Image (cartoon, each protein chain N blue to C red):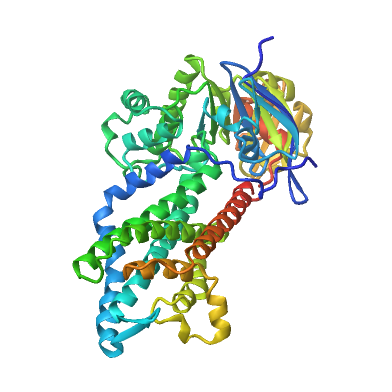
Length: 267
Length: 308
């Protein structure tokens, strides 16, 4: 047997991801408006229902020593969840359609574009979808007077990074999927618990000690801890640590996703 | 001797305990059409995938266009055109957009692709469908669009994996005609097919694969002359099967039975036809020259293959 290069070898990336990204952009442009409505309607329903509905019951929430309106607390957390969901949907369902159902990736690989660059393009594309959704929601939040902090510009960049991180993680499950049903596990076993453990809806201080320790290392927690203070015109506590957590998840997950995708296509 | 466009040397590929391609060597010279024929599971698609660097051989080497696979996969693919067995056209794009987007994967500048699109559509007889999406096209049109897409980078070598499977005769003939035009333009083609008339019509040389091994190689006519008697008499109808074991056997070099039909392969069919006409006037007979299909069935057997 000759030695095959390992599926775990270093990613070989180049700018050939761009025409693949551009292809996705071109398809999306045809459906951008309906997809925009779909992308922001759900997060806004959450925000309105929980923020104003629950907010009336909860009143103000304690955050780093000050009392803030619940809607502000929720908005700053749920925007992270929106970035996560938008990126995840794109990197699971849409990427899987292109990879497995339409065989788009196979077609691209017959041209001089490597699988590594296709996976990179998909992750950047899902990141783009996330930031597009986030931007739209941010504008609505501005209009609703939830926050006018200039630090939101920095938060916007963090959310782009978070979108990319969640794309990378989702691409692992894309690489493993036999069909769309598989993604339900990812949502019910990973994303939904994470939503409740990362301080999106209530402060993590409410969690039992052990659970809180685990939740401190979740990627969504890192995103929330970075973004939430900026909604209140403050800088996050310990930003380096949270950025490193997000970066570690992104790099680790991309590597795993790429290795598993290579294995899938080598068969 | 000029350097071949593609030279595959002693390729072997295993999946688990199954050897899918077994010590296979072949070459494609400039301007030639090499046909790869073989039953389902013979290793045709795996061979193409290895030539494209999509699957790594367990042993052996592939050189193409002065470069080496898989090390130079991208540089080689920049000069290849590929039509895979299953369509991978973009359903959300029109025909023209499909060509444009695909050209960009080759790093071609937009204006250069735009310039080529009308010619490619014309070549594929799809000018009137430029704005239609693949879902609105017939099977033959979709395959021709796939072919046009494979030509977007003006490749020297085309790899076509069963390009006419599932097409009706009209669509198939149009595809053959287009491929012949490409050969006249000096392109080289690697073609896999299940249609023996297609192989005979298009290919200068044939590679017959079975169980991953090369079992014959040569020009279609030479292969037939080498392996088969020139004439075939088929006999079918009531009592035909008994003939296979009757003294009539002596008139044929070889007899074969398949279903309700007896095949007599012979150097000279006249004596056999006379006896058949005299002694078995009710039998239906067909006298024809032996062809590639006979050769194929002789070499690979008549039993149905898995997935066949």
